[in-house]
Image (cartoon, rainbow over all chains, first blue to last red; front, side, top):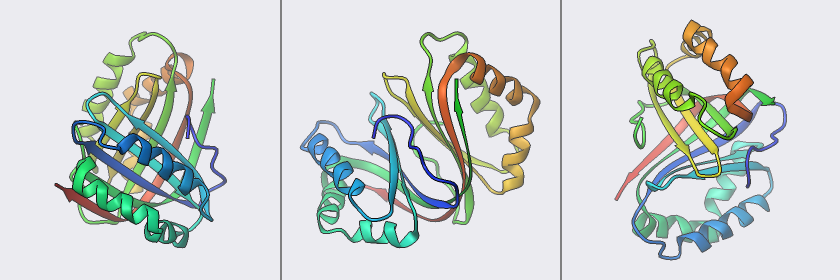
Amino acid sequence: MNGISKTPQPPYYAVIFTSERTEGDNGYGQMAEKMVELASQQPGFLGAESVRDESGLGITVSYWNSLDAIRNWKENASHKVAQEKGKAIWYKRFALRVCRVERDNFFEM
Amino acid sequence: MNGISKTPQPPYYAVIFTSERTEGDNGYGQMAEKMVELASQQPGFLGAESVRDESGLGITVSYWNSLDAIRNWKENASHKVAQEKGKAIWYKRFALRVCRVERDNFFEM
């Protein structure tokens, strides 16, 4: 999940997850790594981009080939455990937005 | 542009801008601030979320009420100057994706 994802021609789907972390790690780092690995093994996964700054604000965007792929990932058992822990421990607040990517544009210097 | 944007009920539109910065500031910080201020004055602007980490990877998501609003912002004269400088000086590479937000979900601890 380093850098910019090489996604295919639109249309495809994006999940924008913006979050503010609570203080302390409390197992977050290990879970986050595991979830990225697990997500990348799901059918329909196209890539993910993730940044968190020192203030604890983070944006993770994952890309998928269909709404069904997003639904299946949402219902994944290990992911559901992580979602519950996210609400109970790791996140002060978050916003999750499911989008259809209509067009894109890549630039390389 | 601090934290999570309080966007209205979907559908609305998102522009996901993922970028890798070159070394050094070279006027980037000042321009970025100015562009956020200018964008927020545009018709149809709904909010923006932005994070950059120490490696220079950043994700900025801006939210808009229509594709026309996005098009107008793209064609804004000051923004066009910033876009050119971005390609010439500030960014190693970037991806820009225009999306329609279909559903969202907010959580607060």
